[in-house]
Picture 1 (cartoon, rainbow over the protein chains, first blue to last red):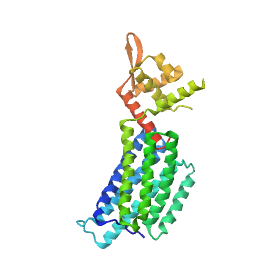
Picture 2: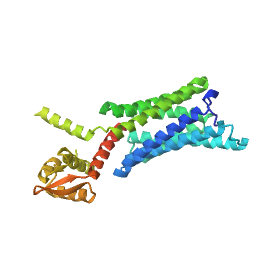
Picture 3: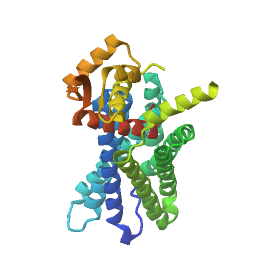
Picture 4: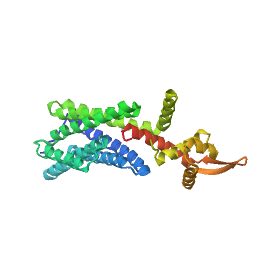
Length: 235
Length: 89
């Protein structure tokens, strides 16, 4: 069953704008990843592109649904509103989960395609047999994004680069936002803070893109210098 | 670790950039750490892709970095950092 998660009335419209913002930033990351893919034709970039493209479609779908249902100027019949409601939110949920699964496959480098299918097959009953799609969705999102964040934390520990730290922080914020969404039915303000945290997570990803685009660190040169220093020390 | 084709291209273009945009073949051979035969193949490919041009300065044969080559260097740096940020390396 799809039950709407609604915050305070003054927040109507703001939530759709923040979801649209998330969609636009996800699209920017997808474009950057696609640019890398077009240069290298490597599968890892194709996965990152697909994941963020799915996130884009998911967040735009939710934003459009929210606007259609909340906007009083758009008059929908009861049956139509129900269809928009179900179609919009189910699309949002399925695409977002698929995007997170792709991130798990990418960050944990799962080699076997059967494992990929297994992941999806385990997710589906957890979602479809639930009495509330939204609560299951946020529960599953916490788990998936939590594991993705852990992988990005390991990456940050290994690299100690600013951009890697920002990516980890972005996904930690996204995980935190899903916990807040999960607890949203208990208190209206949690729905608001969840949206704010989610937007902060996506803004962090946007800053990573800006940093990489404007002032890319010369990692290849640094690696060579490290190798040279290592050689000198060993001598 | 074995260098990828992109890494080798980067090393060659970087060597040119470090020398102010122009380099003599001997220095390039030393800096790029390739055999003469392989370097010739790479140079041909880089010339075909308009990343470098062959010029003659005071009677010496040199290779000069083009705008295309500089753009590739910039793209490569961005790609490296993006790859590292998302743990894709």
